[in-house]
Image 1 (tube, protein in one colour):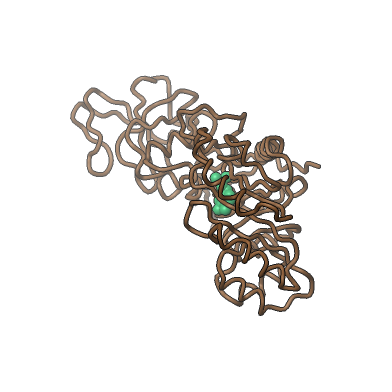
Image 2: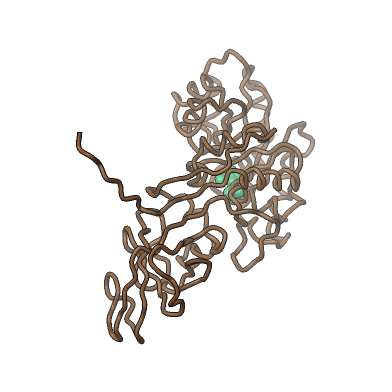
Length: 368
Ligand SMILES: *Cc1c(COP(=O)(O)O)cnc(C)c1O
């Protein structure tokens, strides 16, 4: 056997599961009732199984987007309630949902037909989706009652929960959800059902929308979905930190350019730090020059283009920084929302793209 010398690339995603638990409890305390942890898209890039295991004893269940995600959790031994947020996409998936004891969202007449023609040993709970203005999925308010009755008549359909999802819950303006709320109340009036309306934005900003079940996603990971300029409305703790080190430092003379396309041109003698982290790790390529990067606790500006495996920062103002200095790309010192905004996107997308760099889990707490 050949000896393998491993030069450890210092780039890491740190996932703080204790903070995930803290944030979940914030959602639970604010909303009350039952809380499903939304862990679709690999728990927004944090690792679905690790997050599910950390929350298992305190969450009332989990929500995912696809059957594959749900089965991945079941195979890892996650018991309990798992909601399929988009229901099933084909007939065979409904049988799989039954086999794995999953709860589908029902949002089309086709899915009701599939339900009618699937065999069940025990009643299956379903969530019925009402469209209150997002206009992606769900039945229209005037269709709801009839649809509900149709589901009621299917012998093997168990408890029915009625849900909706807001298009504009991220701000704090109560007007933004006034019309959807009016439609929800009108459509569900008099029905003896449990309800679920709130994602993170609604949990943080719209107590008037609280129902029986909450569905927090982003806030569990420590991020307020409001624009970065708004101070987090609750003490949320960032769960993911992306860290690295300064690997190389070099001097640019006036007029020298750095990186692809020579996007940055030195106007003064410039001390450039190279960080071995790039868009293949999930750092957004579209992040603008000037995006803050924390180097040994000081914020310095990103310069030049983001490469696949590297980024460059201006260290001219911090001459004491040497190779090996610790770097935080996002987490505690730089909010992921700041990086996202600088890249013209949202924290959701940046988190979902976290990949390649090694993941280190911290404090896998078994809470009760
Ligand atoms: C993703 C999703 C959520 C969670 O949304 P956040 O904004 O991340 O809290 C809740 N409900 C539905 C239907 C979703 O698709």
